[in-house]
Amino acid sequence: MSLKLGVPSKGRLMEKTFEWFAERGIRMARTGEAREYAGAVEGVEGVELVLLSASEIPRELAAGRIHLGVTGSDLVRETLADWSAQVWELAPMGFGHADLIIAVPKSWVDVETLDDLDAVAAAFRAEHGFRLRIATKYHRLVRDYLRAYGVADYQLVDSQGATEGTIRNLTAEAVADITSTGETLRANHLKILREAPVHCSQATLFAARGADWSGCREACAELTRLIGVGMPDIA
Amino acid sequence: MTRAEALAATLLAEMQAAGAVPVAADILQPAETLLDLYGEDIRARAYVTHDPDLGEMMLRPDFTVPVVQAHMREGAEPARYCYAGPVFRKQTGGRAREYLQVGYEIFARNDPARADAEVFALFARLLAAYDLRPVTGDIGILKAAVAGLTTSDLRKTALLRHIWHPNRFRALLERMGGQGPLAGARADLIARLREKPTGTLLAEAGQMLGLRSEAEIAARVERLIADAQTPPIPQAEVAALEGLLALKSPASEALAQMRAMGWDALTPALDRLDARLDALASAGIDPASLPFEASFGRTTMEYYDGFVFGFLPAREGLPPVATGGRYDALTAVLGQGQAIPAVGGVIRPALLEALI
Image (cartoon, rainbow over the protein chains, first blue to last red):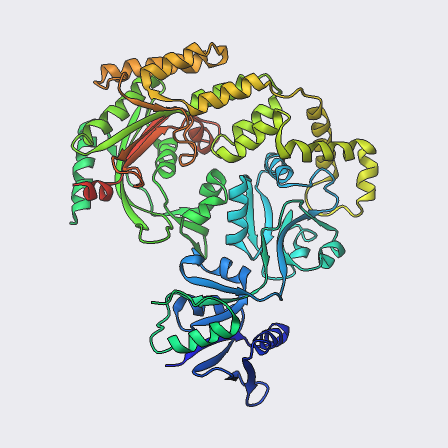
């Protein structure tokens, strides 16, 4: 059986992934015509390329349908419960950087920290009769972060896109979203809280703890040697 | 019938024999009530589902809320209820997601000490055959201690809001004592807010955005500036409060130690503890050997606001077999203006079965 390596199927993330592996002597390419999701690997025996949407890779790793996978560290933490029990984090890859941050309207001159946000949440609930809404698609990460700090009286509302606009549309009071430059936030009159981000994400190579590794130990050993990371503790 | 179910049936029969009326509760509960009560964290612990007509629903994470609601709707006073059935909690690893709870609740206006003692003594009797370690505590004493601090009502309210979040509570207490990183960040903020009139700051910040109004922002700026003039909470009081939170002793001794602190604000709460210990003694529980931990219940039992108790397996690291306490404030929240003092607790039969 060959070792299945899942990589993002399109865009910059795919190109950067191919470059990253190429720099380590592993050549990857899409095969067939441009719309066909098939790929080939050269430079190491017994590795099969599986092209997937980056957002599906965490789930495929958890199910053990792929052995290795490249995706954002934010997606793995958000998608998988108790993620470190399901995957090994083999190598941060140094691209695809993005921070998951909490932002509030710039007009909130009285708010700079989570300490302030927590106090405002209490006052907001007393004034409006419902809990302060934070729009996000990163429910697990944001909830864990706010719980660890001890923020109360908020609620998360789901936003799968254009999250910065939710405050203007009066469907949220604050947002928790991914940003790399902060440009979109500034354009929408938002400011980031002073604390460290909820999570600093980057493209990362993961290995599936639950995959059937029999028959691809050698391929894994060769691949990890080329990449220069320790062999995962496969059974 | 599984052994856990058989145990649940036996426990329920004992509770009925003690005078409780069995009640039922829907498994599907409106999510909104539970979310408003427990906050967003409950989503991480309870199963949420969606009904096309009723909106977000939760598989009941406990019986307390539906039992209180049923009592507020149609109950006569005083009342004793018991129930048994599955509850549902999200877990990681191999722990049970669905498990039985058997519970006993008293709603009574008179003699809270005797009601507290009745619940605890009943649980002690039902659990006597198992190797368990009882623990008691009293959130009411902690609330009295906070209310007795030499500081503004604003600060007391902020601390009371976080009694159940120990880390946040400690951070707030530190800031209000003028110490730690939060105090530094707050000082920076105050300096900026004092630089210019609030109107100017708001104008410079640009467009007003969202539901939180200019008036709300200005009101908080005013509160922040007033708060900055509030003297720090005296270090001696912070130390006394921390000492209180760390207290672990047999109950009679704990009471004596807290009396010896000479903290007047605690007196009514300590009198209540005193009365409870007398009632427990009358019910056959010896306060001289009953463990008391002042911080017990702070992390896991958000709605309890007075007496709290648990029965823990002798072996460390296992979840409590039984927990309970007084939740007078919860009935006020759910009763929409009405309130009734209430105390109760639950047993998890599957955990008992594992101890046999």
